[in-house]
Amino acid sequence: MARIRASQDREAFAELFSHFGPRVKAFLMKSGSNMTMAEECTQDVMVTLWRKAHMFDPARASVSTWIFTIARNRRIDLIRKERRPEPDELTWGPEPEPEQAEALGLQQESAQLRDALATLPEKQRTLIQQAYFGDLTHSEIAANTGLPLGTIKSRIRLALERLRHAMK
Amino acid sequence: MTDVKHHLTDDLLMSYAAGKLPEAFNLVVATHITLCDECRARLGAFEAIGGALLDEEDAVEMDANMGDIFAKIEATNSEIQVTPASTGVFPSALQDYVGGDLDAVKWRPVGMGVKQAILKTSKTATVRLLRIPAGAAMPDHGHHGTELTLVLKGAFKDEHDRFARGDIEVATEADHHTPIAEAGEDCICLSATDAPLKFRGLLPRIAQRFARI
Image 1 (tube, each protein chain N blue to C red):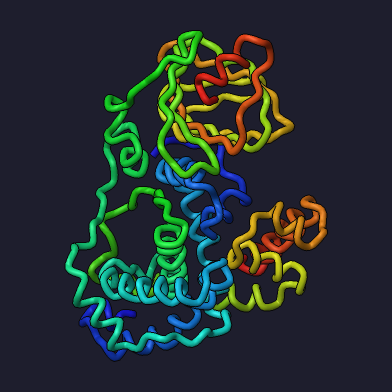
Image 2: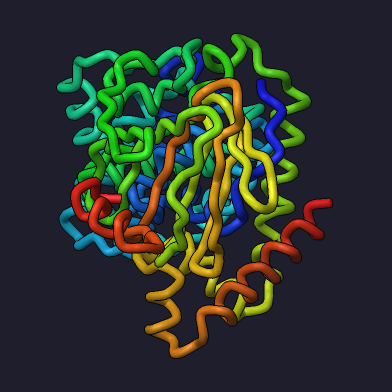
């Protein structure tokens, strides 16, 4: 990502594309898009990534988090056909020379978070996955699984507690 | 930055991060986060969960190759717009819906001195600006669904607490309250509901049909 940001490196972008393109497409399909829509929206996400590369701040978000937020917003825009109100930016964008230490710290935290997610009990992890990737509200998940809404909410709460604990 | 005391729930922040909320709720959440550093930081954590899940996602092969993407990039000429942070009463996202800051709001009376302006969003939930005269009470009401009320100017009190600029009240079906605007200045709130409010008493109920609240 740094190479794309600094010198519009097409080779670096190709690596990003081959890793994230298929994952973004999978995310969109799980969120209720058909194959064609998911493909189109993913292409659009990739175009947006290239064009917004100068706005990426490695001290504020990991590459995968940044791509996730772009995919989420393009989905709302292109597939749900709604506007996505976003908070005002804190600054005028990333620092010209992002703090190496901050970016590194964030990378370590991201790895820690991935591990923590991977070690969640199966039932909790499934619900977190459905909460993010899936087109169902909590009440719809309740209706689908036959679990009471309270159980779903408390499982998600427990999962978040575990993640918080792991990130301390 | 204001001294915000009442924050968003984990449930709302996670749903906003995941892109699952109705547009009307997204607007209230985005407006609160602009005014609240604590919730902005918490949102960052919820978005990081989305990023971590994306990394672990199974891959679905794409039809397009790099050449297709670069052809699209070259066909797109428009500049990426970066909206500067607002210096007015309303954050930028809200200004987009109003068509300007506080002075651009087209208020309509809803009775008892209260005024409102409904903002256009998708139909799954409703969002409106409310202007409650200093010292006046909102009609006594309970809730069917979830109601978010974010204070933008002035302050209100209910039976439990005080809410000033940046504070958000998250009310659910169990809550029943009578907010009163503090004396001194009119209270301006941004309020979203995913179900019509139920007013007690006959008169507000009729008014409700006309006012869409």
